[in-house]
Amino acid sequence: MTIRVLACLSSLLLPVVAHAAEIPADPTNYQTLLPTLQPGDTLVLAPGTYPRLTIDGLHGTADAWITITGPESGDAAVVVGDSCCNTVQLYDASFVAVRNLTIDAMGQPVDAVNAKDTPSHDILIENNIMQGFPAGEQQIVGVNTKTTVWNWTVRGNRIIEPGTGLYLGGSEGDTPFIAGTIEGNVVVNPVGYCMQVKHQNDYAALPDMPAGPNATIIRHNIFIKDDRESPDGDRPNLLVGGFPDNGPGSEDRYHIYGNLLLYNPREALLQATGRVSIHDNLFVGSNAGFAALVVTPHQGKSVRSAYVYNNTVYGDGTAIAFSEAASEDDAVVGNLLLAATGLSGPIADARDNLEAPLADAGQYVAMPAVMLGAMDFYPLPGAVEGSALDLSKMAGEPEFDRDYNGQAKGGLTFRGAYAGAGDDPCGPLDDVVDDCAATGGDTGGSESGDGGSDSAADSGGGSVGGSDGPGDGTAASSAGGSGDTGGSSGGSAQDEGNGGCGCNGARTREPAWWWLALGVGLRRSRSRERTRAHRRVGVVAIRQ
Image (tube, rainbow, N blue to C red; front, top):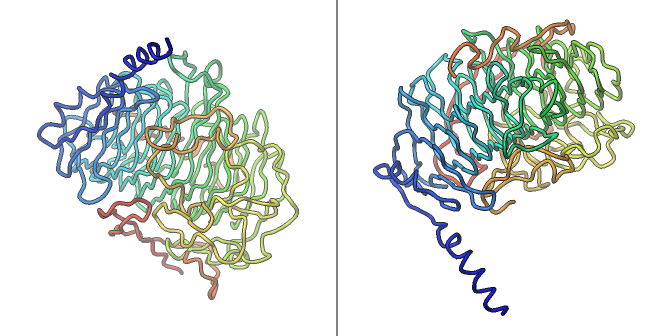
């Protein structure tokens, strides 16, 4: 009897297991093979140049994703742009991964990756290089979602000189980006935003949408801007908009941690609205006209809850500005603020922050500068410690007890993004997301690896966004004035259109302002076992 039952079960399961396959493809046949993929299949693209990739109606399952991948090392599979259509286009897809491709717009006015028309959920965009965007076109995007999506993971990608790096959600707030994870990406010198998550209007839940409350995780990314002006209006490096006022999504939250936001000559580094937790980030190179980190209403959405803790800020003007009081709760705790003004605006719970003038930054950190490869904001011994911080409000949030490098914060005595002093165990701050072998943390973010990352729930974050994917792992002014900043000019990528060295040598004091020259060169990524060249930004600070 038992044998017969087992035999029956085996016969039922066998077709599913037997079908999962690695399917080799090349530029001559891959478009023919694409629509035949079944759950568990992996389409392996050989090196070569491929016409645009359209993923239409492909559906894996939670246990058997469909994967489209280029080589993990050696010569690349390059998907090239066409003036007619976006380079990688998704319609009505789920449990699909796109990995290890070079996605080259070839100067055409098209997005690298775009989802539109019909919802796509449980999507992984991982370890791709996106390049070749037309110069000066803010409307052209690296990763653009123009339809309702949920459980997207965008991980380990390098987006080079786009119009906008990531533009998540519709410009009118009617196609929300829900429960996503954005981690370990490098966005270099966009015209507009490195990343924006759009505000969300009230919406009805769709089948298979997570019930929530959900969280969108933005962690371990590097967001770099240069001096170029945008023809459509200047933008922050990162902007996150508010959630629905009622119904699904109204209790959602952003968790933003472990990121490096570098340089913005005309806007804030981060503008946040709604319900946010912002911790253990490095904000470097803000300008005198805007606060580095701005918490403010935007596009009809108010500030509900804002926890801002253990960040390091280095820049002119104000470090952290609230332009309205949070309606539910706030906490601004344990930050290291090296700026002309530390805090501004109506903050109810501001405590245990260490504020110092920009000119005195060298008394607190190893090498204050705005230069990748040289700047080092690791604390000097005894310079930024104090009494233990009370982070009880944040207990249970994702990695609230881990610093920028991923190290445990221990006794919670350090101010700023690092819980240590002396030599940074993770080495220089550069434009590559590396492993930090000494501690298990990262210099710029998490290693993308082969499989899915741990979700915030694994770190005690509750219900969170972003599925793991296939693999082995399961500005208000510096015075804090009212009104919107950054995207306040209505701007978004598509609002009007389509849709340090780690050394402790001689320390210098940075002057109150600087000019930056940003150049793009070549560098090979140390974060992946891949040998093809990755473009690198070199940042040179010219001091006065």
